[in-house]
Length: 107
Length: 225
Image 1 (cartoon, each protein chain N blue to C red):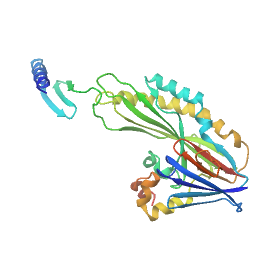
Image 2 (tube, rainbow over the protein chains, first blue to last red; image 1 turned 90 degrees about the horizontal axis):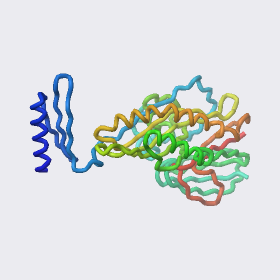
Image 3 (cartoon, rainbow over the protein chains, first blue to last red; image 1 turned 180 degrees about the vertical axis):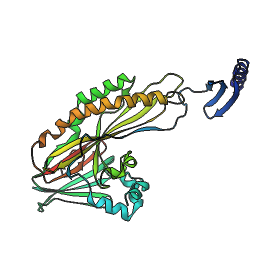
């Protein structure tokens, strides 16, 4: 990383010369970042050994789709014993795809 | 003739590979039990079976998925799968826990995708799921509605997560419209018929003596008058 360290030092110096403050270097498993601030703006620079391993946590999104009218449900598919099983033994929850918190939620 | 179907799930309830054994039964009453993770259903002779996989994972629908992903610069990495999921295992359960009974099951339509990113980001690999709720209404008619959507992806770091997430969120209304257009095909075999019961069967609902199937890929609805 000597070459990269020299590069980081040079970038940091360039940012300071351009009037940026709070120049900070953060190292991680994939490389290093430099961040800096100038007034309401900022700068970001990253050096990495592998562009396709940049870490990011799993991203999720979604939710229920609103119904246009209340559903008049007489019967829905389900396993009647499932509720009883899970309430009696929440440790079974993972085998059914539930989190233990999900079982607690409807106790 | 009634059939007793026994489903032994090897990778979780209505998930992944399962072994299905079927035997003739003299009991013409519907019944189901869940013992030690083995799900047994007594299926009366009058059962109407709706196998959802072939109705949903058609070449046309897989092409439609491919087109929608291409609009985001991505591609599908799986065909469309159809799975039964207990309500408590639906990812948005915590947004409205009392939206259904805990023992209710929903239909999950899902596909995997890959979205390439610029060189400074890792590529995105994820899964899109659309959840349907099937039920008998007060008249005993089969109804299926879109219940919700969920996507999960890995990658996109360090700069592209927001753009990918926004693109997927923006695509969801169009995905929902496409799925809603499929619903008549799902219910057409049962249209106008008054039923007293509906239930899920993993896989294609075969009555063969023994079968090995994938519950993540296919799901059937059983209906009784």
